Image 1: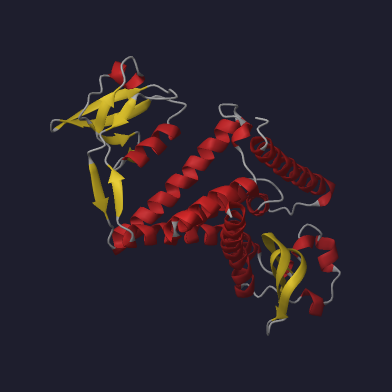
Image 2: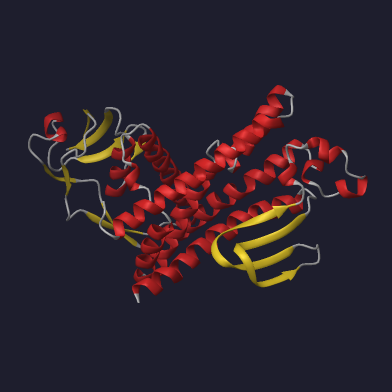
Length: 352
């Protein structure tokens, strides 16, 4: 039953996140008068398919682990000689027929929609779901810990860590992770007086929350929108820090997971209820957006970087060097997929 629930949850989560991402590319291309040949949810043979009035083939494929939008001419974006040889009729609706700034919007629209989706979900949760939050009040300080040596005492209230305002214990945990490679500047409220201390990086600061200090919170409309944007920003920043730590060796690559991990977490969230599932959709949407913005030639971030370089240098990129870069990008993506799959398989069978 758990496996079935995990599969259903995975299809829901990936379906929503991928559909919204590809919808961004689709709507931007339509706006730019660029032809969209195919909008597919999943890969492989189509289970259901139809054409809209603009000639776009819509389909739901048999392998629903992803999806794509096929934009006319985008695969030849670096072969401008081929484009120049097309007739005027065939150039109509071609990706390269759009000016560079419109191409930029088409490429950026996917991640933009993912950020918007996460923001709206988080905002809705803050507005409509009252939440019992743990306030950032210190209950205990472990002796001989970083916090103990810095002079933090029970009853202290964490007000700010570096530039981040702290209003609950969850934000404190995130701020600690973001400060894992530098001394954290911590502002405390102690008996109506502000106290500033420095906490050095450590696996644990030695702080234990005062479990009796909780609060039921429900945001208003504008406060909910702000909190949703803030949560989206924090989740994006946290992922970037984690990726940096993996690259520098501060974190193990064993922490990376594939769609098996996504299925497990999504299944657990679905069992908990709609709000938990929506939270996972928002988190995965943020992750997809951030990862897609990495400057790899096969990702949206790589194509955006290329358009920026072309605009600055006023020279079109292409040729054999670009082909090699794209192949290298695909090899990296395939290798990353294999690594995450191995991590999950080894974890399931107790090999790690």
